[in-house]
Length: 86
Image 1 (tube, rainbow, N blue to C red):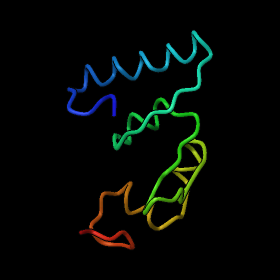
Image 2: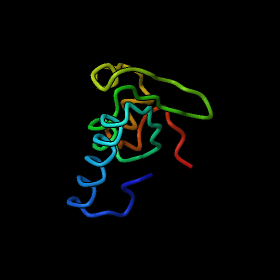
Image 3: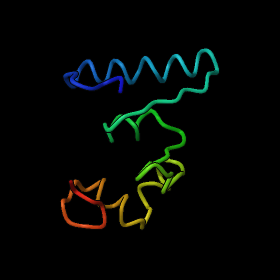
């Protein structure tokens, strides 16, 4: 999780570093994070894991338009929905 605990300025610097490194070296980067804003900014494809399984996979736009109830609950930060909270 490359941006965990960072302030907004450093988060943006790390996001740009990942984007530029991927672009300049034609790399495939796998980034694991709970920072939704960063993931939407740097990801070309996004996968969401829930209970050990990929429950949604697509471009940032496809993820934003998903109707998957678990994904919607996660993105909204709601405690109500199909996700088990403790």
